[in-house]
Image 1: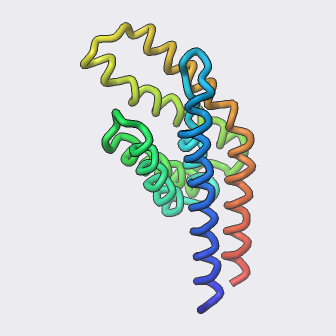
Image 2: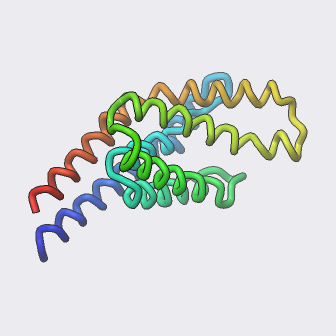
Length: 173
């Protein structure tokens, strides 16, 4: 087996382990640690980091896997997170390739925008079909975004470390 194949297997295993740990945290721990009946979302933050530091293909693949896990965790979504997180990972990966610098300000901005987009798309059916008060939905969206932003710093360092290891392994070949 070649070194590049070994590196790729290790990289995929690392991403799978990260995804599994974040999935367990989001579904089993943070779903019970609610503030004002709001639970944080941490998988979109990881997708932003992988897309930003590793590019569109790894960001899209990680977003696809994270979206499938998210859709299985939330009973009321069918393919919402699968499509959204895949597009998010690929889009941020493309932006980091051509437009964004790979640093904390870019990660912070992309994470905040991603969390707001996820909240808006999650709450859209309640606004349109159930005719829930828009101010109540806005309150939920803002609180979910702010609560999720507490996890930006640890996920920034974790995804940056994984991206840096991937670039080092790729340049040594």
